Length: 286
Image (tube, rainbow, N blue to C red; front, top):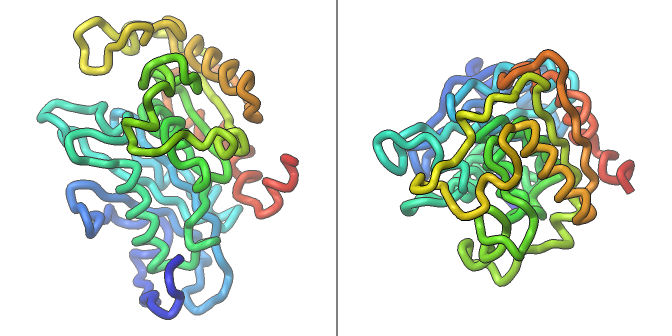
């Protein structure tokens, strides 16, 4: 936990509302922008829940679309940006698997949270937060759940194209077999994972199989990688059934009229996220 007395309190006009893009000080090749409630009072005492919203392959802005949610809930929204080309010049996917070539994107996200917590008053100093991800960001988010469940209040997953089942009999990253070893953990904390409620969203028109079919020889190909189904709709359904069978509280929703677009899925996630940001959310689920 950060010492409150060590926090800088100077808040400039660009630190409220949708902020500029900031480089992460410990690793400036990645960064983030924020959406801070317009009534945030740097002289006040109110603590604000944290929502982290992770982009897809297009690196869409995930700060401004949450402006209404930030205003209605008092949440501070952190939208990390993992630029393309970090692993190789043409790479768009490596961040989705959390770690690659010396980059630990899960730990870089936690460093972003520490940086934000040094400037703003976050609930629990950001130790626990709500996580949303769209497309590739949803891939990041459910894998982050498996590794860091104790940091999460709830997770909302919008249209992941490639899913990792909570299944120790399947090799990482088709399943979670060997995932703990890959991340240098003694074991996955399955009990903590099961305590985190999950929302799964996909557009009713998000049915193009061409982009998400993984061919043998691709960097993310493994035997069984396409077994969850040919479309995002099928894969979201398979992941929902897998998580429910494990004992996780799951809300599975198909969004009418939506294709593969972050904006309608963000709108559809608003109710779940608003509830998850309330202090009473965990008690309600019990």
